[in-house]
Each structure stands twice: as C-alpha cells, then as structure tokens.
Length: 258
Image 1 (tube, rainbow, N blue to C red):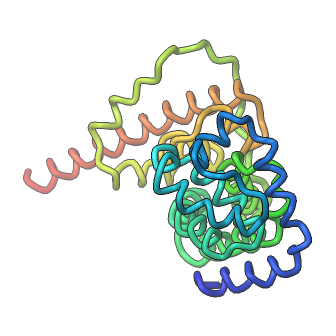
Image 2: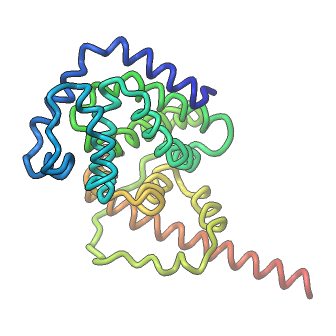
Image 3: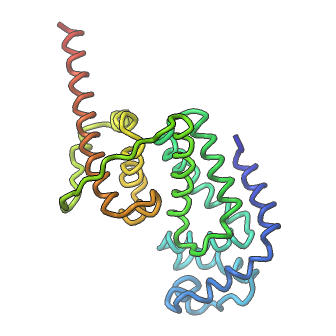
C-alpha cells in the first residue's frame, strides 16, 4: 500500500505534467461573485493578479475571515492543489484519508481490501483532480470515487451486488435517530456490517459522514427519493439487528447465571 509520502510524490510528478493548466484556477477565482472574493481575501487585501500571488494570499485569508468557514478554506485548497501546490494537496489528504478509510471499510470490510481500495481512490484523485470543474464539489467528488471503487471491489468478491427494492416512501418529516443513542459505537458498527452493501453505504454517508440527501444522491448516482427510501429501509433493518443483538446478549447472560 502507498503511504502518505508516496501519494504526495506521485501528486508532485502529476502536477509537473499538468502545469500548463495552472491559469485555469486563477480564472476560477476571478469568476467568483465579488462578495465571495471579498470574504476570501478581505476588503483591504489586493486581489491576486498572478498564480504566485494566489498562493501567497491564501495564508493571510485563512488566518482571518476564512477561518470561520471551512467550506471556503477547502475551496481554496482545492484550487491550489489543482495548480500544483503540494502543501494544499497534503492538507486535503490529511483531512480525508482517515474518513475515506472508514467509509471504504464499511463497504468492503476491514483488512487489505479496504487499504487497496483507498490506494486506488487516491491514485485517481492524483490523476484527475485537475479535471474537477467546481472545487466546491470536491467532497462529493472524492466520495463518489470511493463509492465506485468500493462497489467495483465488491463485485469482484461477489459477482452481483444486489440493488435494494425501492418502494414509495411517505415523507416521515424530521429524522428520529434517538433509538441509536441506546447503543454503543461498537454495537452500531457490528449492526452495519450485517446489512447489505447498499444499506451500509447510505447509512454511513448520512450519519457517519454527515452528507446531505442531495450529496448522497450524486455520490451513488440515484435520485434523492431513492436515497430517502433506501435510508428508511436501512434504518429499519439496522434497528431490527440492534434489537436482536441486545436480546441475544440478554439471553446469554441468563444462561450464564442460571
């Protein structure tokens, strides 16, 4: 498996190959609404005229107004990474690597398979980050890559990864997740592992990664209605598994002390 340093080395090599695309990111900045530009750089700070200037103003902006909005911080880091800045790419790697590994493990299981999939994800990011047209969609984009790589690996393990039956779902209003507060993290992880890949997928993205319905729909390539429906049935199945596990545990205790 490639380590952090190897991934960054590959990124640096790829950046040299893509160096002719650097001006694209400065143009992206110039197309931002003036209110967003002002938020990024501050009204008293000169707006960037060159790519080097774009790199330089980033640090001042982050320490001032950008500190209050992590989404804008990430937006600029992606722009810098697309322009060949290894420090910016390293920060994106550090932010997402552990989260992606957790997500991939929920889909393909622990062990070398998950690590191999994660390696494939980062190699794809290194090769294709310059093709990302909208830096603000980086989070959705990288999870979509992880989703697709995980599903490809699952299909190699099991020829068919079944899609769940999607039924019409009546809007339940606000999500009630209070039942899960009764269980510890290990019990929930164990319950997730017993669900189908598609159910594990949406539950992990929604409740572990805190993604919106719209983001999940884009990641797994389906409608928002399908996401809501799949989440509904996934939660019901997980709840059933948790209750079953608790009942089995109580029964085992009875037998032990009877």
